[in-house]
Length: 455
Ligand code: ASP
Image 1 (cartoon, rainbow, N blue to C red):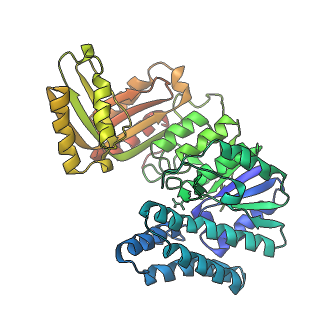
Image 2: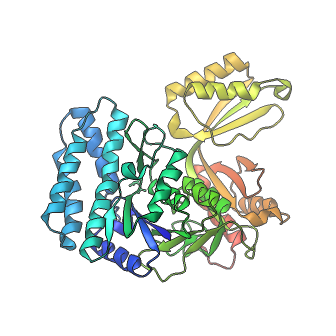
Image 3: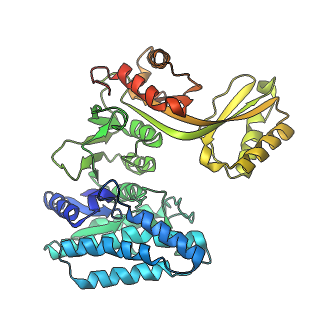
């Protein structure tokens, strides 16, 4: 059996629902359908999840319903239902559900917000099940609570609990098509808890693992995963095949096609992931597999992401001091701050983290503690850093990839703030100033995928 997941743009309108129906009909092995909330219909549109977040935040702040948001939300669902001629009943049910969630108990605001956010997928799954059923398909909505998708009680950041896999395995034996809402599960205490944003990909991967799917098909709105962001380089090379590790590195570093946490459940069960386009299902798409032949050079893709900062700490004889690293990280932990990388030298270390985690007050307190507790010679924070990740399993066997990358950056007059090559040798990271990000990515693309014209 196959688990198939559709992203928000694949479900943004009735017309998109019809494409989904065709895809389901084309292969009877497509038995579990995971849906996102309706996404954008055009560039200027808003995602249902974003509308829900606005409505939820407004309710928390003003204790009254944001009527405009509520009307917009309902219009998104009723628009789809009308286009598909599903009748009034389902709309009345969705309206009641939205109202119930938006005016529900908010003593724990984070749980309240998760209950509200989950409405996007939950109601879309009900809508999809009703539509498929209407079209003569034996389909039904499957509640994550009933199915036993249990997650940690970390609002907005849930992790799947191990027993979920056992519970969900039973779905294999159910007949017909199951329409499963993505993005959320339930805590042991029965609270609705969501995954991080774009987390429906995770739901699909967990289900694929649990039911031992033959493949996890992930439908989106592009023909393939591209070697680089198409907004940076015109018509970039399509990637036909990637390993899980390569895809995870690229997703983590900015490729939004697939959530980076959605690879591990599929990888653990050895289930291939196939990225496909709902709007062009005949396109071959991108296969994500355990291993591949490195036929296309050392590098498979280049990703980049902005919004990082670096805390630079220097202290003479740091290398001799026991527990220095632990104490740095303890300070960050005390402020609930996670870090991404930490390149280091003999007398200095840089801690790279997401800038959004620190306001100026936190910054000041961290610097003070580092001077006081670590007796550091110098502590400084450098902001507006972009991280560029050059990814490819082939780098392990190729000599000179780092040299080629740094030469390309130098030729484009991009100053490298830091380099970090993970011990896995699947990726190589360059930190550059945000203003140089696009220039750097283009230069690297030119170097490793030279036959393609760069805009
Ligand atoms: N609807 C949620 C979001 O916009 C989750 C998802 O689409 O996967 O983040």
